Length: 481
Image (cartoon, rainbow, N blue to C red; front, side, top):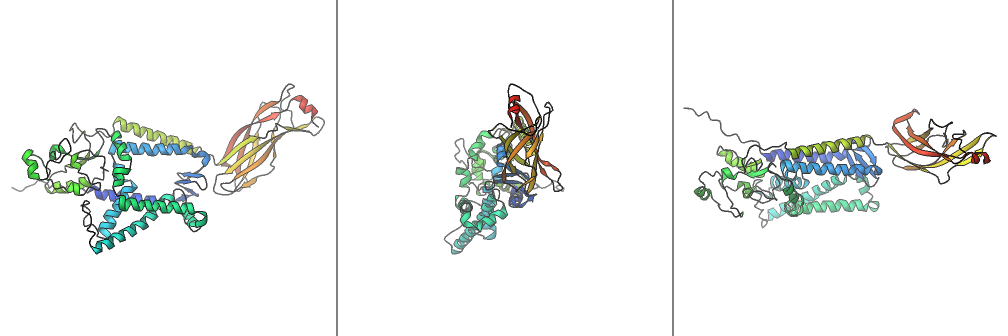
């Protein structure tokens, strides 16, 4: 009778999917600083020009109250990702992992042939051979070049690429930038070539934080002891090195003790030992076991799942549990707040300070007295082009007269990013308030705006500020010369 049983289908390795993510993240990170819309970047924190660019909107340093929200957004996203998928950030997105994978798997293994196989990361090359020494030096040279590109890309989020290139040609005036670039590049070389995955194990604090964030439903790379058998005892001592030894104690144990999951691990751990801080959820061990068990027509003993489902066998993993929903809610809330605060950005900055002298008076005619109040306006053009600005004053409806701008008399130009101080005089020739006892403080509204090329008021570059106009009492008006 013909066997109609379908053979076990080995799924696409996670490693290939990680490579796609790595390539996308690399291209995205390299390309993003070059994307400019109306002179604004997606993200740029310029200490040189005291500007923050966010989502192609430019903010002045006085508007850096947005940065705490950005930091909260970043940390909540990473913490939420950890609660949901374990140390998946480390294995799939972290620059350290991307650099190490590119250096070890692509440069050393595929391009130079210094390492024999990607699937065996525990065997180091024989450095007694001259050809391997030459390949090792070649790998260092390539790493040195790539590290400088990566360091430059990092700095492009603080200094725009074209300005960065220009600054490097003027070393005497930008030695700090040059030194930072070299220092970051040298650190990357040390990290990628010499420190290697020890950075993940011993230096990065994230591995310590993750153990606090995990719960029973956190998804991670797990060995199924119920199917494979206990390779280690309760004290994490290895009990079996051969399959026949294991099956002598547990006849139904499926682990072949082939060590494939061990030899492929970049952080040099044995996933069969149980939960370990060194695991970065790269899922290389899942791919290795999937290949071995797939040839036997069985599913992998190492899977990306949770303790709740694999170890405790209590049921399916609950992905959208209350803790995850809380993180999602917080991320949405902070994003909305950030978007709202960004949308209310003012496209010009204006501070108004009244001069120490309260007012000045001058008699024009027998019954007409001119009253002036002077102010210091500090205005900044936050746009990317030179613009003309002017002001107007809105007199309150409850006064008997009108307040006008006496100085300046015409619009003035301000170049991008610069601050301009203007002495502004508000004037009235009317008796606004007839008070015989005291001076009167009258609230006024100042409308500052830019002019379009056709001379009309700009609706975008326009702000409202509130100040006061002090009108003298009757005796002062009568004594005016």
